[in-house]
Length: 491
RNA sequence: GCGCCGUUAGCUCAACUAGGCAGAGCAGAGCACUCUUAAUGCUAAGGUUGAAGGUUCGAUUCCUUCACGGCGCACCA
Image 1 (cartoon, rainbow, N blue to C red):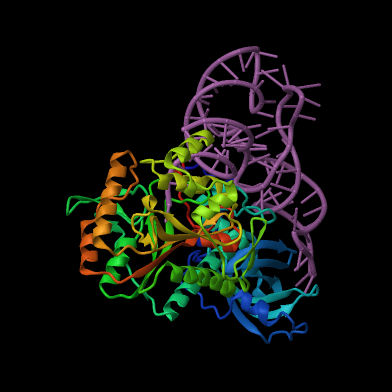
Image 2 (image 1 turned 90 degrees about the vertical axis):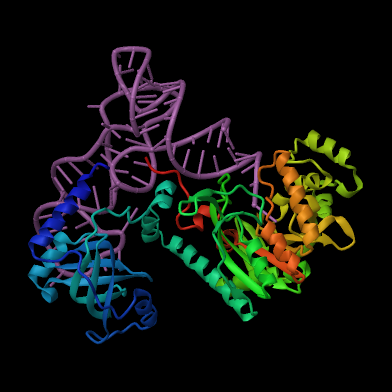
């Protein structure tokens, strides 16, 4: 149990005083008819406001208190904004005024009724005729001027962060709008939103380590999903031609400023489409979200001007490596690539092959240069077990990832629908696993069985929602776009 | 996992190249004040300096270990 500071003790004492006065410090209800932002907007351009005409009832948290003897000012903050209130001894009476002065603190939530007016200095203010304590706060808020700065406390006690740092709430409102914009966009295009299992007996759809949990009644281990890909494609087999899901995925690996163990991924699948269609769709979804939410596709991310207007630059992975490192990976043999990798200290995980080497080169030389939106297309077969081979070149698959602001924003392919090829790819993954790549895919027999019934040609697209929100809110860390980022427990 | 930095009052920060009684602003308490807005004036208070150990007459300061966080690198679709 934490030590109780004097400030908290004082507030507990005030709480007792309030109860002694027979006032409920935690009443049940307060009927409001306005929000601060609405009042601020409505009267923004009206200078002369007649007294005692525009009556309002609003509620919020007291953020500042300024007493002047028999008259007091305060700012209260509701879900929308702040507004000043003005309380006079003459109007609310001695008892209530003394109660306000002595027992109501910054941080308390109150409801006020009164009328809108302007003070001598011109600030829009509510002239309080009556007020009511709605919730006594027992902990002091951070300082009014600097707010809460300490990042650890901001992440651990996000509620305080949200109270004191208005721009933080703005980021999360923007996050919600982005998701809403994408959902509306997809619904307009005939996509159906579905829910698929989070607890999965066989995990798949991505290269990652899962969280393992246990179901007692069935006495089986289950995995928290690392992706929902394989379930959504089962639905394509089951004649959902256009499906999507905002999926909370869980990956049991390192954390840094672009990785949280649980994160949000949009995955969508469209029958009779290929990865070219998905490129257009990805550009449209992202630029449309920017336009709808920010009003522009010209954004600034971490100091870089970025233009999200489609069409985006398209580059094959091989060409991108050529451009940023001068190495023509296609012209070199596996042995030659291997020696360059060794010389440059590039590590390859799992089984070394030309494909895994090319992918490692891409990650080393290219990724960190991709500031303007760029579609990197045609990935090596070995690192893409769920994508269809590239037309005319069996070494590569029809897969792309959109990048912007040096962030990897998604992943898409022409989905592999040949069940025999798919089974071989899974078997290849099992070999990778035996070679020591514990993140390689596991065999999913039921998924292959679904493909055996026949899946139409399908384009699939995944978009990392957290990273997209980072991009559109100019946030440097994924922790700034996740309300409650994962932290080590407090001690 | 590695490296660097940080952790001092409820909050935001000082206490330096020197090891010598730990300080300020805001918040809080008391008094005054009927249009303030980082309200103002006066008064008094507020600390196990993240934890444990070591060096020293003496440690916020130097050393070691640990905890938590941040940043960078590595890992990771």
